[in-house]
Length: 471
Image (cartoon, rainbow, N blue to C red; front, side):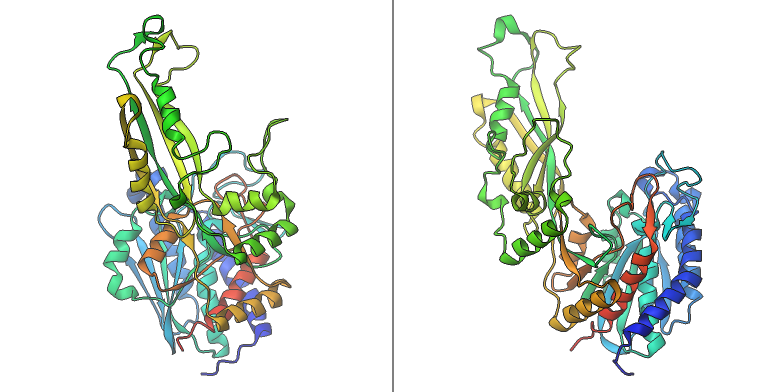
């Protein structure tokens, strides 16, 4: 088969098939209240996750795809997973990832709209799951069909479509174990579950921060003691907790102290960050601070790098401290704090968790009883460079379909599934992108998919797959 790709034909094909085939099926998908298992304890009996899978299967089987096979996999007490395979005629393996489970309904939808009511208006498809991430599987499969339409060679492509992502993907690792021999080792992994800061270009996620979170517990006494009797003598559990936190964070500047929590920022990262700031000043100025409250860092570049590529410490909960209304003049027995540490991309969260626990528990001040158990540990994501030929094609396609070349995006949050996939396939390349963007409102009211962008993402993925052939 030839490998000459006609981008104009890709555009015409994708436009046509999105309108006549994808959108009708995607509207059917929106109508299904396929809540993720965390939000529907009776998900198995209700059958909505299965209905979402069946809708996608019916659509896929309606296409004139060559080399198609599908299989639904089920493990006991775990949400189902769909595996789609499209045989290729060229060497190489590509793995697409997406999910069909959804967030809860939320209140505040605009008049005439609702979570399970698909509405197409002004180029948007409203409805829960439209942009997060129901469209992803459709876009991926259609990108392969667009290549087959031209007779362009492509590698074998597999689609791993789960139904528990919005619950933190607790079942995915079990399926990856179960299907290890079937999935093989892909040269390229594509995930269409992110987006960018505008709809004017393809945004490719280069990094995500990881997370290490848990409870710091400081205990000093077995019972509360009248403050008139014990204050100044018995150590305050709050003061000791504050002292321990200072081992991690400078209480004056907010700077994270341990060197092992930092990475060296490359020139490439700084240049990409500067471009993003030049394009959109709001990217570093969207903080609802009260009048007169100053940021910890003021330089726009420093703000961007800090929020996306640097470590940080947050106290997100507390126990052992009564409300002001209920507080008496009593020295409390303990102070428990829920701490959340964002780790830079490329650092092992497991290693950080061990070091944080040791740092907080060793040499306890005043001999206090200290425990620091880290219960939420997830690596970040740092994308390796794409092969030159593939990166060049992505640039060409981005400029053709968007009018601008793709840009790198750094994200300060954590998507555990990205780290999970990268740990499974450490030598694979990744394209993490999507149709999300301003106004998409994923997880909230009026969630909506920007249809023109979803089409462009599909076109760009078709171009990328045409160059994802093992050399």
